[in-house]
Every structure is written in C-alpha cells, then in structure tokens.
Length: 213
Ligand SMILES: Cc1cc2nc3c(=O)[nH]c(=O)nc-3n(C[C@H](O)[C@H](O)[C@H](O)COP(=O)(O)O)c2cc1C
Image (cartoon, protein in one colour):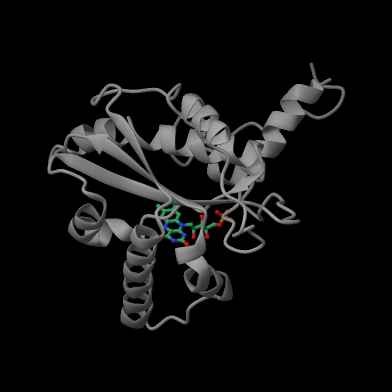
C-alpha cells in the first residue's frame, strides 16, 4: 500500500507542466513564497561548482519589458529558421511576458569547462536546483515554464540585468500564480519502454503483478 504522501508527491512531480496560460498576471508573487521555494532549490545536489547558484528575480517593469522583447525576437527567429509555426501556448506567453509578475533567472558562478565530464558536473550542479525550484513553485500554486531560449543572447540579457562576466545563465522561469489551470500528467512513454536491464538494449523484467512476491 503506497502512503498518501508518496502519491501526493508523485502527483506533484508528474504534473509540473509548462504553464504559459491561465496565469494571474495581476497578482505579485509573495516574497515569502519565493524565498521558501529558493530555500527548497538550494537543497539540490551539487558537484563541480559547489553551491555557486544565484537566483536573479526580476520584477522591475522596464527590465521585464526588455527581456520579453528579446525573448520574443529569439523565439520568432528560431521558428522562422526551422520553418515551424508558433504554437498558440508560446504565442500566449510572448504576448504577455512583459506583464509576468516575476522572471527568475537561475545562474551559476563560473563557466562550464570544455570537456563533457566538466559540463556534466557544471550543469549538473545547477539544473537540479532549477528543477527543484520549479517543483516548489508548483507546490505553492505558482506556474512556470522551463525556458532556455534567452541563453542564445546571454550577453544582451547580461547587459539588461547587470550580470557580470564569469556568471553562466541557465534557465529563466517566468512565474505567476495559476488561475484554474488543471495540470495533468503528460502522455509519455512508459518506464518499460525507456528502460534497459543489465545491458544496453536488453529487455527488463516486467512489473510485479498482484500476487507476485
Ligand atoms: C532544455 C529545455 C528547454 C526549454 N526551453 C523552452 C523555452 O525556451 N521556452 C518555452 O516556452 N519552453 C521551453 N521548454 C519547455 C518545453 O517546451 C516543454 O517542457 C515541453 O513542451 C513539454 O511540455 P511540459 O513541460 O508541459 O511537459 C524547454 C524545455 C526544456 C527541457
């Protein structure tokens, strides 16, 4: 019998969708909520860069407008390059991104090394904190989207926000309390489909069925 707490926790993990619509653009994010969520984020594991995480919370309308304009430019250019239409949810976000109550930039002190293992260590020491932050916000009814587009113009972002050299930008989480957003698990491949057992490509034992030991 799985405990209720476990089920609730797994539900939260499984329903941390990208939320670009049904957001309350008029309600500022409570500062205590934000700090509580960042306190959760800094419990994430760290490797190469230790606790070099820095969270830049942007609520200033002028800076948000400049970031929103940049974000929109990058997204539109990217979709044009790829010959893809802009999805309605992305359109909805860019139409109001300048009004989002806050943008949270997750940054890391230092720069990623050139080797794969160095990069795994570097980004592996900051992105778990970003994901914990997104989950903690979700737990408090705050919707976000994991956005990485702005890293394409990190210099411009640095100029707008005064981020010094030697600091690496990762994701930006646009955050707002959700409005009647029903967040559900997404359609994803099952664990069996994406799991090998003992050797690459080898099939795995099936799940226990009722009556198994
Ligand atoms: C590495 C990465 C980069 C992403 N960058 C963006 C982004 O810049 N803008 C955006 O709107 N969504 C971005 N997303 C969100 C994805 O579009 C989203 O996770 C995906 O469509 C699945 O939807 P879900 O998050 O609701 O499950 C990114 C997700 C990942 C993992």
